[in-house]
Amino acid sequence: MRTVVARAAAPRRYLMCPPTYFRVTYSINPWMDPGKPVDLPLALTQWEDLRDRYLSLGHTVEELDPHPDLPDMVFAANGATVVDGRVLGARFAHPERSAEAAVHTEWFRAHGFTEVREPEHINEGEGDFAATASWLLAGRGFRSSPLSHPEAQEFFGRPVVGLDLVDPRYYHLDTALCVLDGDEVMYYPGAFSPGSRAVLRRLFPDALIAEEEDAAALGLNAVSDGRHVLLPQAAVGLFGPLRERGYEPIGMDLGELLKGGGSVKCCTLELRC
Ligand code: ARG
Image 1: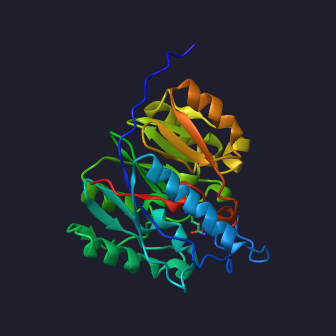
Image 2: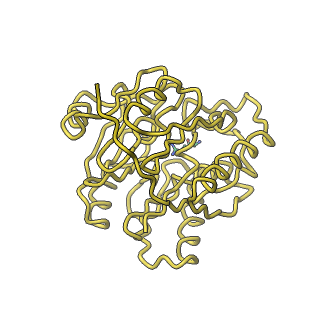
């Protein structure tokens, strides 16, 4: 029996982009089926519920203006990585999303961020970078280039741990791993290569290990403020284990955005200042 730790939420600052022009007209991940209709008003309501939930928990939400030609902009987490107020911009793997990178860097420059780097190598922001207290975890295999890892390490001055993603359903690190607090994470081992699994076991021997069903509901695409964990409501198997560790899971329905291959975390870029 694990001792329940009293968890404290720290106020966060997030950047989000409303799904005003969200649609699925191309397919760059296995979740996207252009033949499946998207209910846009419902997508907007679901997104507003997420934003309002952050606000009611005392967090700050900044909004990025959506662009009619960039339907995936709602997945704001991919546009940059912000650690210690330093901004590493994105460089997208697919041409369909490449113009999003400049929209993000412009936003950061216009909002008082002075250390903004336009990257040399492909990286899809917080889709593939996850900051724990000690490391910057970095996914590779589908989107971000392995060369983006030393680039991030040099820019942030934090040790980067590269992790190999092997299952196309979990094409970004944030679809398979979530930082809960400090150096505590939850993840789905099946998304990683055997060697990367061994690395994760070594770094995080007490991690919460997700079952396949919860991972397949994109349950790891979650956002934690150190106490509240907002996650897709269908990932029911994660609620009990999170509560046992003293977290307060909050189920969200982002079903329409799931048609684009993203959920809670993909819609949320954390501004760590
Ligand atoms: N349709 C988007 C793509 O394939 C979804 C991105 C989801 N974002 C994330 N952080 N995993 O790029």
